[in-house]
Image 1: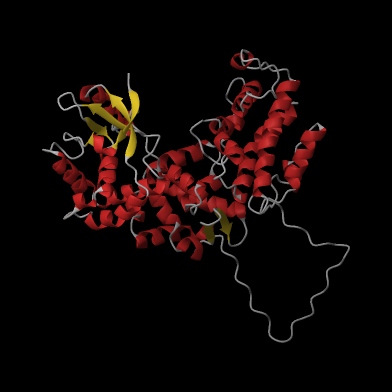
Image 2 (image 1 turned 30 degrees about the horizontal axis):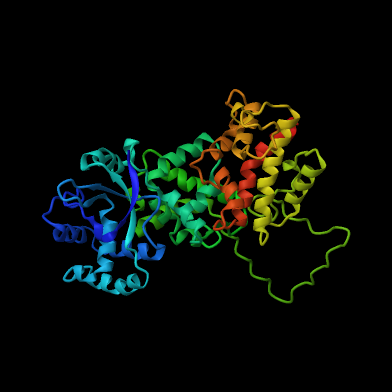
Length: 457
Protein backbone atom coordinates (compact mmCIF):
# COMPACT_ATOMS: atom_id res chain seq x y z
CA UNK A 1 0.00 0.00 0.00
CA UNK A 2 1.33 3.44 -0.94
CA UNK A 3 2.13 5.70 2.02
CA UNK A 4 3.11 9.36 2.29
CA UNK A 5 6.24 10.61 4.02
CA UNK A 6 8.14 13.86 4.39
CA UNK A 7 11.68 13.95 3.03
CA UNK A 8 14.55 16.36 3.22
CA UNK A 9 15.58 17.64 -0.19
CA UNK A 10 19.06 16.19 0.35
CA UNK A 11 17.56 12.71 0.76
CA UNK A 12 16.11 12.62 -2.76
CA UNK A 13 17.92 11.56 -5.93
CA UNK A 14 16.82 12.42 -9.46
CA UNK A 15 15.70 9.58 -11.72
CA UNK A 16 18.58 8.56 -13.98
CA UNK A 17 16.13 6.60 -16.18
CA UNK A 18 13.81 9.57 -16.66
CA UNK A 19 11.59 9.02 -19.71
CA UNK A 20 11.47 12.78 -20.32
CA UNK A 21 15.21 13.10 -20.91
CA UNK A 22 16.41 9.57 -21.56
CA UNK A 23 18.88 7.50 -19.46
CA UNK A 24 21.96 9.23 -18.03
CA UNK A 25 24.93 8.35 -15.86
CA UNK A 26 24.92 10.01 -12.46
CA UNK A 27 23.10 12.84 -10.72
CA UNK A 28 25.07 15.61 -12.39
CA UNK A 29 24.03 14.38 -15.83
CA UNK A 30 20.43 13.90 -14.67
CA UNK A 31 20.26 17.54 -13.57
CA UNK A 32 21.94 18.79 -16.75
CA UNK A 33 19.51 16.78 -18.88
CA UNK A 34 16.50 18.38 -17.16
CA UNK A 35 18.01 21.86 -17.64
CA UNK A 36 18.61 21.18 -21.34
CA UNK A 37 15.07 19.88 -21.78
CA UNK A 38 13.21 22.56 -19.82
CA UNK A 39 15.40 25.69 -20.20
CA UNK A 40 13.50 28.83 -19.05
CA UNK A 41 10.47 26.77 -18.06
CA UNK A 42 12.51 25.35 -15.18
CA UNK A 43 13.18 28.89 -13.91
CA UNK A 44 9.46 29.70 -14.25
CA UNK A 45 8.61 26.58 -12.24
CA UNK A 46 11.08 27.60 -9.52
CA UNK A 47 9.54 31.09 -9.32
CA UNK A 48 6.08 29.58 -8.96
CA UNK A 49 7.21 27.25 -6.17
CA UNK A 50 8.70 30.23 -4.33
CA UNK A 51 5.57 32.34 -4.79
CA UNK A 52 3.30 29.53 -3.59
CA UNK A 53 5.54 28.61 -0.68
CA UNK A 54 6.07 25.03 -1.82
CA UNK A 55 5.05 22.39 -4.31
CA UNK A 56 1.39 21.57 -4.96
CA UNK A 57 -0.19 19.55 -2.11
CA UNK A 58 -2.58 18.12 -4.69
CA UNK A 59 0.27 16.52 -6.65
CA UNK A 60 2.82 15.03 -4.26
CA UNK A 61 6.11 13.67 -5.49
CA UNK A 62 6.45 9.93 -6.12
CA UNK A 63 9.55 8.13 -4.85
CA UNK A 64 10.80 4.60 -4.24
CA UNK A 65 13.58 3.25 -2.04
CA UNK A 66 16.42 1.84 -4.08
CA UNK A 67 17.35 -1.47 -2.48
CA UNK A 68 21.04 -1.39 -3.45
CA UNK A 69 21.83 2.04 -2.00
CA UNK A 70 18.96 2.63 0.41
CA UNK A 71 18.38 6.09 -1.10
CA UNK A 72 15.05 7.44 -2.35
CA UNK A 73 14.72 8.06 -6.09
CA UNK A 74 12.14 10.43 -7.59
CA UNK A 75 9.99 8.79 -10.28
CA UNK A 76 7.41 11.60 -10.57
CA UNK A 77 8.30 15.23 -9.88
CA UNK A 78 11.88 15.38 -11.13
CA UNK A 79 11.40 18.91 -12.50
CA UNK A 80 10.20 20.17 -9.12
CA UNK A 81 13.07 18.53 -7.25
CA UNK A 82 15.57 19.87 -9.80
CA UNK A 83 14.17 23.41 -9.39
CA UNK A 84 14.46 23.19 -5.60
CA UNK A 85 18.01 21.81 -5.71
CA UNK A 86 19.11 24.56 -8.11
CA UNK A 87 17.63 27.30 -5.92
CA UNK A 88 19.28 25.76 -2.88
CA UNK A 89 22.65 25.55 -4.67
CA UNK A 90 22.75 27.81 -7.75
CA UNK A 91 26.36 26.76 -8.44
CA UNK A 92 24.85 23.62 -9.98
CA UNK A 93 23.49 25.83 -12.78
CA UNK A 94 26.83 27.43 -13.63
CA UNK A 95 27.59 27.43 -17.33
CA UNK A 96 24.01 26.59 -18.31
CA UNK A 97 21.22 28.57 -19.92
CA UNK A 98 19.48 28.94 -16.53
CA UNK A 99 22.52 30.15 -14.57
CA UNK A 100 21.40 33.77 -14.36
CA UNK A 101 17.81 32.85 -13.44
CA UNK A 102 18.75 30.62 -10.51
CA UNK A 103 21.41 33.00 -9.21
CA UNK A 104 18.66 35.64 -9.02
CA UNK A 105 16.29 33.28 -7.19
CA UNK A 106 18.85 31.93 -4.71
CA UNK A 107 18.67 34.86 -2.20
CA UNK A 108 14.87 34.68 -2.10
CA UNK A 109 15.06 30.93 -1.55
CA UNK A 110 17.62 31.38 1.24
CA UNK A 111 15.27 33.83 2.96
CA UNK A 112 12.39 31.32 2.87
CA UNK A 113 13.95 27.92 2.17
CA UNK A 114 11.90 24.89 1.15
CA UNK A 115 14.01 21.89 2.08
CA UNK A 116 11.30 19.37 2.93
CA UNK A 117 8.73 17.86 0.58
CA UNK A 118 5.94 15.30 0.85
CA UNK A 119 6.09 12.25 -1.36
CA UNK A 120 4.10 9.11 -2.04
CA UNK A 121 6.40 6.15 -1.37
CA UNK A 122 6.18 3.15 -3.68
CA UNK A 123 7.76 -0.17 -2.71
CA UNK A 124 9.77 -0.32 -5.94
CA UNK A 125 10.38 1.26 -9.34
CA UNK A 126 8.22 -1.39 -10.99
CA UNK A 127 5.34 -0.72 -8.56
CA UNK A 128 5.24 2.93 -9.61
CA UNK A 129 5.66 2.26 -13.34
CA UNK A 130 2.03 1.45 -14.33
CA UNK A 131 0.71 4.46 -12.41
CA UNK A 132 3.30 6.76 -13.93
CA UNK A 133 2.35 5.58 -17.41
CA UNK A 134 -1.32 6.39 -16.70
CA UNK A 135 -0.28 9.76 -15.32
CA UNK A 136 1.26 10.69 -18.68
CA UNK A 137 -1.16 9.07 -21.12
CA UNK A 138 -2.90 11.50 -23.45
CA UNK A 139 -6.29 12.80 -22.36
CA UNK A 140 -7.84 11.25 -25.47
CA UNK A 141 -7.33 7.82 -23.95
CA UNK A 142 -9.80 8.66 -21.18
CA UNK A 143 -7.25 7.41 -18.64
CA UNK A 144 -4.62 10.16 -18.60
CA UNK A 145 -4.98 13.63 -17.12
CA UNK A 146 -7.44 15.88 -18.94
CA UNK A 147 -5.86 19.27 -19.46
CA UNK A 148 -7.99 22.40 -19.44
CA UNK A 149 -9.06 23.58 -22.85
CA UNK A 150 -9.33 27.19 -23.95
CA UNK A 151 -12.71 27.99 -22.38
CA UNK A 152 -11.86 26.25 -19.11
CA UNK A 153 -8.63 28.27 -18.86
CA UNK A 154 -10.57 31.45 -19.64
CA UNK A 155 -13.09 30.76 -16.85
CA UNK A 156 -10.29 30.09 -14.37
CA UNK A 157 -8.48 33.29 -15.41
CA UNK A 158 -11.66 35.31 -14.98
CA UNK A 159 -12.33 33.87 -11.53
CA UNK A 160 -8.81 34.89 -10.51
CA UNK A 161 -9.37 38.52 -11.50
CA UNK A 162 -7.81 38.51 -14.96
CA UNK A 163 -9.45 40.03 -18.01
CA UNK A 164 -12.26 38.02 -19.56
CA UNK A 165 -11.37 36.49 -22.92
CA UNK A 166 -13.55 37.67 -25.76
CA UNK A 167 -14.36 34.14 -26.85
CA UNK A 168 -15.69 33.18 -23.41
CA UNK A 169 -17.78 36.35 -23.21
CA UNK A 170 -19.32 35.66 -26.62
CA UNK A 171 -19.95 31.97 -25.90
CA UNK A 172 -21.75 32.76 -22.64
CA UNK A 173 -23.71 35.53 -24.37
CA UNK A 174 -24.90 33.23 -27.18
CA UNK A 175 -25.25 29.81 -25.56
CA UNK A 176 -28.67 28.18 -25.37
CA UNK A 177 -30.06 24.64 -25.39
CA UNK A 178 -30.69 24.46 -29.13
CA UNK A 179 -29.22 21.64 -31.22
CA UNK A 180 -27.74 24.26 -33.54
CA UNK A 181 -25.73 25.86 -30.75
CA UNK A 182 -24.56 22.50 -29.44
CA UNK A 183 -23.24 21.71 -32.91
CA UNK A 184 -21.44 25.07 -33.12
CA UNK A 185 -19.75 24.50 -29.77
CA UNK A 186 -18.68 20.97 -30.67
CA UNK A 187 -17.25 22.05 -34.02
CA UNK A 188 -15.31 25.00 -32.59
CA UNK A 189 -14.09 23.25 -29.44
CA UNK A 190 -10.56 22.65 -30.78
CA UNK A 191 -10.46 26.07 -32.45
CA UNK A 192 -11.38 28.57 -29.73
CA UNK A 193 -7.92 30.14 -29.76
CA UNK A 194 -8.31 31.03 -33.44
CA UNK A 195 -11.87 32.24 -32.82
CA UNK A 196 -10.44 34.52 -30.11
CA UNK A 197 -8.13 36.09 -32.69
CA UNK A 198 -11.05 36.68 -35.04
CA UNK A 199 -13.09 38.36 -32.28
CA UNK A 200 -10.06 40.51 -31.45
CA UNK A 201 -9.68 41.77 -35.04
CA UNK A 202 -10.18 45.50 -35.72
CA UNK A 203 -13.27 45.16 -37.99
CA UNK A 204 -15.32 43.68 -35.15
CA UNK A 205 -15.79 47.18 -33.74
CA UNK A 206 -14.77 49.41 -36.64
CA UNK A 207 -16.86 47.76 -39.37
CA UNK A 208 -19.45 45.66 -37.53
CA UNK A 209 -20.16 47.80 -34.45
CA UNK A 210 -19.48 45.06 -31.85
CA UNK A 211 -17.52 46.00 -28.73
CA UNK A 212 -16.44 43.18 -26.40
CA UNK A 213 -15.24 44.67 -23.12
CA UNK A 214 -12.47 42.46 -21.71
CA UNK A 215 -12.58 44.23 -18.34
CA UNK A 216 -16.26 43.72 -17.61
CA UNK A 217 -16.87 40.70 -19.87
CA UNK A 218 -19.85 42.39 -21.54
CA UNK A 219 -20.90 42.70 -25.18
CA UNK A 220 -22.12 46.03 -26.54
CA UNK A 221 -23.69 46.81 -29.91
CA UNK A 222 -23.20 50.29 -31.30
CA UNK A 223 -26.83 50.75 -32.42
CA UNK A 224 -28.21 49.16 -29.23
CA UNK A 225 -29.99 46.36 -31.11
CA UNK A 226 -29.26 43.31 -28.98
CA UNK A 227 -31.25 40.90 -31.15
CA UNK A 228 -29.47 41.95 -34.35
CA UNK A 229 -26.12 41.80 -32.58
CA UNK A 230 -26.82 38.32 -31.32
CA UNK A 231 -27.71 37.15 -34.84
CA UNK A 232 -24.52 38.69 -36.21
CA UNK A 233 -22.27 37.01 -33.65
CA UNK A 234 -24.07 33.72 -34.15
CA UNK A 235 -23.59 33.98 -37.91
CA UNK A 236 -19.84 34.59 -37.51
CA UNK A 237 -19.40 31.55 -35.27
CA UNK A 238 -21.72 29.35 -37.34
CA UNK A 239 -19.74 30.16 -40.49
CA UNK A 240 -16.49 29.05 -38.84
CA UNK A 241 -18.21 25.94 -37.44
CA UNK A 242 -19.52 24.85 -40.85
CA UNK A 243 -18.04 21.52 -42.08
CA UNK A 244 -16.44 23.00 -45.20
CA UNK A 245 -14.82 26.00 -43.51
CA UNK A 246 -11.03 26.18 -43.88
CA UNK A 247 -9.36 27.81 -40.86
CA UNK A 248 -6.51 28.83 -43.12
CA UNK A 249 -8.92 31.62 -44.14
CA UNK A 250 -8.50 33.29 -40.73
CA UNK A 251 -5.00 32.33 -39.65
CA UNK A 252 -3.33 35.54 -40.87
CA UNK A 253 -4.21 39.02 -39.64
CA UNK A 254 -5.23 40.35 -43.06
CA UNK A 255 -7.30 37.24 -43.73
CA UNK A 256 -9.27 37.74 -40.53
CA UNK A 257 -10.12 41.29 -41.57
CA UNK A 258 -11.27 40.09 -45.01
CA UNK A 259 -13.36 37.35 -43.39
CA UNK A 260 -15.20 39.78 -41.12
CA UNK A 261 -16.05 42.15 -43.95
CA UNK A 262 -18.34 39.42 -45.32
CA UNK A 263 -20.77 40.30 -42.52
CA UNK A 264 -21.02 44.05 -43.02
CA UNK A 265 -24.57 43.59 -44.33
CA UNK A 266 -25.56 42.50 -40.81
CA UNK A 267 -23.54 45.22 -39.02
CA UNK A 268 -24.92 46.85 -35.88
CA UNK A 269 -23.19 50.19 -36.44
CA UNK A 270 -25.01 53.29 -35.25
CA UNK A 271 -26.58 55.38 -38.00
CA UNK A 272 -24.56 58.51 -38.77
CA UNK A 273 -26.08 61.71 -37.51
CA UNK A 274 -27.53 63.83 -40.30
CA UNK A 275 -26.14 67.32 -40.81
CA UNK A 276 -28.32 70.12 -39.40
CA UNK A 277 -30.21 72.18 -41.99
CA UNK A 278 -28.85 75.58 -42.97
CA UNK A 279 -30.16 78.56 -41.03
CA UNK A 280 -31.39 78.83 -37.47
CA UNK A 281 -32.72 75.63 -35.94
CA UNK A 282 -36.43 75.61 -35.11
CA UNK A 283 -37.26 75.65 -31.40
CA UNK A 284 -37.66 72.22 -29.80
CA UNK A 285 -41.13 71.82 -28.34
CA UNK A 286 -41.22 70.94 -24.66
CA UNK A 287 -42.53 67.45 -23.95
CA UNK A 288 -46.12 67.32 -22.83
CA UNK A 289 -46.54 66.23 -19.19
CA UNK A 290 -49.57 64.19 -20.27
CA UNK A 291 -47.47 62.06 -22.62
CA UNK A 292 -44.24 61.05 -20.85
CA UNK A 293 -41.40 59.71 -22.94
CA UNK A 294 -41.79 56.00 -23.54
CA UNK A 295 -39.05 53.87 -21.96
CA UNK A 296 -37.10 51.58 -24.25
CA UNK A 297 -38.27 48.01 -24.26
CA UNK A 298 -36.33 46.04 -21.63
CA UNK A 299 -34.24 43.08 -22.71
CA UNK A 300 -31.30 41.07 -21.42
CA UNK A 301 -28.76 43.43 -22.92
CA UNK A 302 -30.31 46.64 -21.53
CA UNK A 303 -32.03 45.80 -18.26
CA UNK A 304 -30.47 46.78 -14.95
CA UNK A 305 -32.27 44.43 -12.58
CA UNK A 306 -31.52 40.79 -11.79
CA UNK A 307 -34.92 39.59 -13.01
CA UNK A 308 -36.72 41.29 -15.92
CA UNK A 309 -39.86 43.35 -15.36
CA UNK A 310 -41.41 42.89 -18.81
CA UNK A 311 -44.91 41.47 -18.58
CA UNK A 312 -44.16 38.65 -21.01
CA UNK A 313 -41.54 37.28 -18.63
CA UNK A 314 -43.28 37.67 -15.28
CA UNK A 315 -44.64 34.63 -13.46
CA UNK A 316 -46.82 34.19 -10.38
CA UNK A 317 -45.08 33.32 -7.12
CA UNK A 318 -47.21 32.24 -4.16
CA UNK A 319 -46.18 32.73 -0.54
CA UNK A 320 -45.20 35.95 1.19
CA UNK A 321 -41.51 35.08 1.58
CA UNK A 322 -40.95 33.78 -1.92
CA UNK A 323 -43.03 36.48 -3.55
CA UNK A 324 -41.07 39.08 -1.61
CA UNK A 325 -37.75 37.65 -2.81
CA UNK A 326 -39.02 37.56 -6.40
CA UNK A 327 -40.03 41.22 -6.05
CA UNK A 328 -36.54 42.10 -4.84
CA UNK A 329 -35.05 40.24 -7.80
CA UNK A 330 -37.10 42.49 -10.10
CA UNK A 331 -36.20 45.68 -8.24
CA UNK A 332 -32.53 45.25 -7.34
CA UNK A 333 -30.13 46.96 -9.76
CA UNK A 334 -27.32 44.48 -10.22
CA UNK A 335 -24.51 46.90 -10.99
CA UNK A 336 -22.73 47.79 -7.71
CA UNK A 337 -24.97 45.27 -5.88
CA UNK A 338 -23.46 42.14 -7.40
CA UNK A 339 -23.00 40.24 -4.14
CA UNK A 340 -26.57 40.91 -3.00
CA UNK A 341 -27.87 39.84 -6.42
CA UNK A 342 -25.81 36.65 -6.29
CA UNK A 343 -27.26 35.74 -2.90
CA UNK A 344 -30.80 36.52 -4.07
CA UNK A 345 -30.42 34.29 -7.12
CA UNK A 346 -29.03 31.37 -5.11
CA UNK A 347 -31.63 31.67 -2.33
CA UNK A 348 -34.58 32.04 -4.72
CA UNK A 349 -33.60 28.92 -6.66
CA UNK A 350 -33.22 26.84 -3.51
CA UNK A 351 -36.35 28.04 -1.67
CA UNK A 352 -38.47 27.71 -4.83
CA UNK A 353 -37.26 24.13 -5.28
CA UNK A 354 -37.93 23.29 -1.62
CA UNK A 355 -41.44 24.80 -1.81
CA UNK A 356 -42.49 22.61 -4.73
CA UNK A 357 -41.01 19.43 -3.27
CA UNK A 358 -42.64 20.04 0.12
CA UNK A 359 -46.06 21.05 -1.25
CA UNK A 360 -46.19 18.09 -3.65
CA UNK A 361 -44.94 15.74 -0.91
CA UNK A 362 -42.17 14.43 -3.14
CA UNK A 363 -40.22 11.72 -1.33
CA UNK A 364 -36.74 12.54 -0.06
CA UNK A 365 -34.13 10.33 -1.78
CA UNK A 366 -33.41 7.18 0.21
CA UNK A 367 -29.76 8.05 0.90
CA UNK A 368 -30.81 11.21 2.75
CA UNK A 369 -33.68 9.49 4.52
CA UNK A 370 -31.22 6.96 5.92
CA UNK A 371 -29.23 9.87 7.28
CA UNK A 372 -32.27 11.06 9.25
CA UNK A 373 -33.44 13.83 6.91
CA UNK A 374 -37.22 14.16 7.05
CA UNK A 375 -37.83 17.61 5.56
CA UNK A 376 -36.55 19.12 2.34
CA UNK A 377 -35.13 22.13 4.19
CA UNK A 378 -33.11 19.95 6.59
CA UNK A 379 -29.41 20.75 6.70
CA UNK A 380 -27.45 18.19 4.75
CA UNK A 381 -29.60 17.88 1.62
CA UNK A 382 -27.53 19.61 -1.06
CA UNK A 383 -29.00 22.04 -3.56
CA UNK A 384 -28.04 19.77 -6.46
CA UNK A 385 -30.13 16.92 -5.01
CA UNK A 386 -33.15 19.23 -4.63
CA UNK A 387 -32.92 20.52 -8.20
CA UNK A 388 -32.37 17.03 -9.61
CA UNK A 389 -35.47 15.77 -7.78
CA UNK A 390 -37.52 18.72 -9.05
CA UNK A 391 -36.46 18.04 -12.64
CA UNK A 392 -37.25 14.34 -12.29
CA UNK A 393 -40.69 15.27 -10.89
CA UNK A 394 -41.50 17.81 -13.61
CA UNK A 395 -39.93 15.89 -16.48
CA UNK A 396 -40.02 12.16 -15.63
CA UNK A 397 -39.45 11.16 -19.28
CA UNK A 398 -36.33 13.36 -19.48
CA UNK A 399 -37.26 14.60 -22.96
CA UNK A 400 -38.11 18.25 -22.33
CA UNK A 401 -35.48 20.69 -23.56
CA UNK A 402 -36.65 23.23 -20.95
CA UNK A 403 -34.66 21.43 -18.27
CA UNK A 404 -31.59 20.60 -20.33
CA UNK A 405 -29.65 23.69 -19.13
CA UNK A 406 -30.38 22.64 -15.54
CA UNK A 407 -29.12 19.12 -16.18
CA UNK A 408 -25.91 20.64 -17.56
CA UNK A 409 -25.71 23.00 -14.58
CA UNK A 410 -25.77 20.00 -12.23
CA UNK A 411 -22.66 18.53 -13.83
CA UNK A 412 -20.04 18.57 -11.04
CA UNK A 413 -17.35 19.46 -13.61
CA UNK A 414 -19.24 22.47 -14.97
CA UNK A 415 -18.24 26.03 -14.11
CA UNK A 416 -20.60 27.76 -16.51
CA UNK A 417 -22.41 30.91 -15.38
CA UNK A 418 -25.48 28.96 -14.26
CA UNK A 419 -23.70 25.94 -12.77
CA UNK A 420 -24.21 24.68 -9.25
CA UNK A 421 -20.48 25.17 -8.67
CA UNK A 422 -20.78 28.89 -9.39
CA UNK A 423 -23.95 29.23 -7.28
CA UNK A 424 -22.12 27.62 -4.37
CA UNK A 425 -19.09 29.79 -5.07
CA UNK A 426 -21.14 32.94 -4.53
CA UNK A 427 -21.55 31.81 -0.91
CA UNK A 428 -18.33 29.95 -0.17
CA UNK A 429 -15.55 31.16 -2.50
CA UNK A 430 -14.06 34.40 -1.23
CA UNK A 431 -12.05 34.79 -4.47
CA UNK A 432 -15.07 34.56 -6.77
CA UNK A 433 -16.30 38.04 -7.63
CA UNK A 434 -19.80 38.11 -9.18
CA UNK A 435 -20.13 40.15 -12.37
CA UNK A 436 -23.36 42.02 -13.15
CA UNK A 437 -23.69 40.66 -16.69
CA UNK A 438 -22.95 37.10 -15.51
CA UNK A 439 -25.69 37.28 -12.88
CA UNK A 440 -28.32 38.52 -15.34
CA UNK A 441 -27.36 35.83 -17.84
CA UNK A 442 -27.53 33.22 -15.08
CA UNK A 443 -31.03 34.42 -14.21
CA UNK A 444 -32.04 34.09 -17.88
CA UNK A 445 -30.80 30.50 -17.93
CA UNK A 446 -32.61 29.57 -14.70
CA UNK A 447 -35.81 31.51 -15.46
CA UNK A 448 -37.62 28.70 -17.42
CA UNK A 449 -36.95 26.33 -14.52
CA UNK A 450 -38.18 28.83 -11.93
CA UNK A 451 -41.27 29.65 -13.98
CA UNK A 452 -42.10 25.96 -14.35
CA UNK A 453 -41.57 25.33 -10.64
CA UNK A 454 -43.99 28.07 -9.58
CA UNK A 455 -46.52 27.13 -12.26
CA UNK A 456 -46.58 23.59 -10.88
CA UNK A 457 -47.19 24.65 -7.27
